[in-house]
Length: 434
Ligand SMILES: NC(=O)c1ccc[n+]([C@@H]2O[C@H](COP(=O)([O-])OP(=O)(O)OC[C@H]3O[C@@H](n4cnc5c(N)ncnc54)[C@H](O)[C@@H]3O)[C@@H](O)[C@H]2O)c1
Ligand SMILES: O=c1ccn([C@@H]2O[C@H](COP(=O)(O)OP(=O)(O)O[C@H]3O[C@H](CO)[C@@H](O)[C@H](O)[C@H]3O)[C@@H](O)[C@H]2O)c(=O)[nH]1
Image 1 (cartoon, helix red, strand yellow):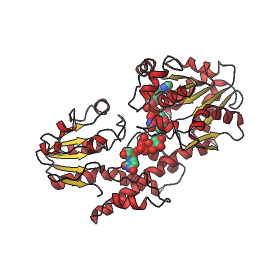
Image 2 (spheres, rainbow, N blue to C red):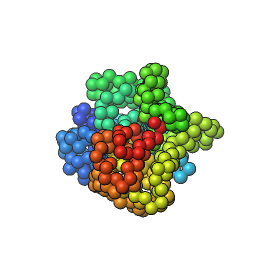
Image 3 (tube, protein in one colour):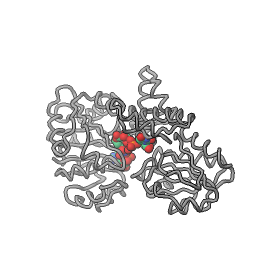
Image 4 (cartoon, rainbow, N blue to C red):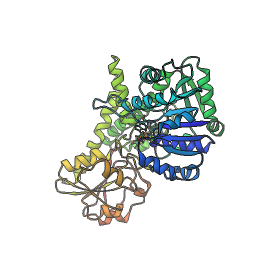
């Protein structure tokens, strides 16, 4: 099929490259000229394993990028994959979705044959019905469901394994207006390659249900991590290793072994904003969700607990502290919502000097947080050299291999927020929940 994707960030670029690899002709439309140029040159605009290879293979062939929305007229299907950030009160900011939908509608008004618009951005229930469809109808001058159809198809990929997740999903969700078989047929055609290769469950549902499934998925996973962190904090009080406990309870398949890694908590571009958005949406509708609010509260406290543990062993005022890891998780250069931010800010507030190292995220951290006063080291060894204490923030594999590097610390205090560094003789080691 001929596919256009509006927004070429983490999701739009991954989906475009994977669909091109499945044999579709794909065009990415983005307002950012640098991103467009990178894709056309066959380079990934983001660090994501496997993406560079796919772009190198398909750019200039089945995949291209442009800033010109007119490209959508040459396609059968358009994904909306633009960002849906948080407003200051946590509620979803749909401004970009609205702007992109209007630009899309103007182009579709000038197209003769049928078209499917697929909302892939994460949006709160009702957004497609109350914002996307009316904006399209205003531009088209006709009701949606005649020549232009609308569906929601939330994305569940994880950063750091996005390409693999898109290719081998456990489920795909197709949300359509009741009875819109045409839209469902197009979605099945689009995903035929993925379904054939990975045999995922295909959930056919309504527009609002499709939107809500995405929030429920993220809220459940974020809450699961907060629950194991709450339990982990209790474990720490009793000198019990929360990882041994988690390994055991994870054997009960009603609990499941994944997302039981306790420590510094969840960050990223999705969990924090999506949990906040669904809480705000629920409150707007008259329901205050206490479990979700508690999940956020536990998460907000974990960085503070790491700082307290550091302070138990080191006078932080004037200390030089090595921070290992800046990305919100390993395998990505994304620093949005990273737990490194409250850790670094907390250290600075307590008068410490911070020297940070991350294998890939230093550039993004500098770019997004130009005002945070820290030094950046070009290796973990360099960050540790002469440091009075060390905070492990991201579970990069290379931190697990650190050993003699700790010997060059002025005072070898290590507080591990991710259960990645081995306890060893010669270092004062504290785990957050073990
Ligand atoms: N990042 C993830 O892992 C992930 C996973 C699943 C779902 N999601 C959801 O997918 C959506 C996109 O997330 P992302 O992380 O890819 O966002 P992103 O910020 O990385 O990318 C958004 C892109 O949209 C472009 N853009 C902004 N305004 C535009 C416009 N008017 N027209 C065209 N392009 C425009 C930006 O330049 C940017 O490249 C969000 O709703 C997010 O919640 C993200
Ligand atoms: O046991 C765990 C698992 C995760 N995390 C943390 O939780 C955050 C999120 O991790 P992960 O879910 O792996 O990363 P994302 O790429 O943000 O993916 C989530 O958010 C995406 C965007 O909505 C969804 O598509 C994915 O399904 C969902 O897992 C990270 O800070 C992790 O360090 C833990 O602390 N303990």
